[in-house]
Length: 451
Ligand code: MV4
Image (cartoon, rainbow, N blue to C red; front, side, top):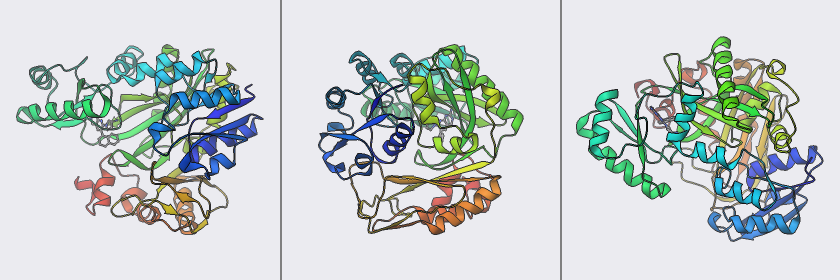
């Protein structure tokens, strides 16, 4: 087992990792920017190193500074959390070549999944269904036109280096295709430094369902069921739940088995998530996330597995201590992502927390690095807390989320708590009747169904 781990992240996820480490008897090293000197993740770690000024590029994305911190504190391994360097194959490679263990998959698997055309080809080769589209890059407007006519409109142009919706454009007919191609290409080039595009048939009303997997370095693979992440706004998830209200046990079992076979075939190890669009009873593989995800706690709540602990264990080379038949999915969990933002305009609201009271009681978990007197800096993501609630069934979970949101007090900054309170009282949400476009309609005051 590792003796000491450096946590290359901040906020609630740095705390989440520090907690797992402490329970495993592993000492921790926090790294922080000058803006985070008073942050909770620094206080809850055994040691800390300041790695640069507030801007993420100069601190949490500063590979050399993080590797220097790892060297001077003599750690065994580096946990990247999510975001920042968590899916940076070059960083994973540098971590290994400096003699540390990267707590995640191999650099090769990160690179493979970072290229979305390669990811689709690999997924297809390992038995996953993918959205019909171009088999490779779309090189020109003429090329785009030929492929669009072959697969049929509407089509979606996506960035090969993309993910998260940037550099994505829909075309509904020939006349829209030229502009969509040029805009997608320009956006992709600006966002990723790589303007290569690919094309897919545009699915109109899918749900976003993702399957959590966990794989060791001995061929052991399990899935931990799915999460429904359809409730997003501008590609920012707002609320996730597990299991998905759209699946029955048989469908869950089938997609889980298919996912495990693909992961085993790829030789992937660590935690990972296969993202699917789910429409008319079919799962279409979209992308794979090769990191621990923000919403991992909903899976932990229904499976009783500590994903961070298992991620660390398999990174040491240990085999999984259980097989698929040991995993029992029971009950229901919902995560509300609470952001320091105006709940109507979504304008960020950093500043000093003047009052803080987290909800508690049976089935309520709060993952947050907030404390009364803390100042939320303006330099990073505005997510300040995750409220994760478990119930024996979906209705019990919903009732409990409502009461937990009433208890939650965060003063001094604006938060999205009031929006969550409205969302969990909304009939379509209560009925589980939503797709990836529903939330946009809800927040803009329109009926999501007419979207
Ligand atoms: C799609 C799609 C419809 N059809 N692909 C958005 C983020 C990126 N990871 C992929 N995305 C989409 N890909 C096809 N072929 C619709 C989306 C999409 C979306 C997906 C998941 C959750 C929210 C979304 C919101 C808008 C569009």
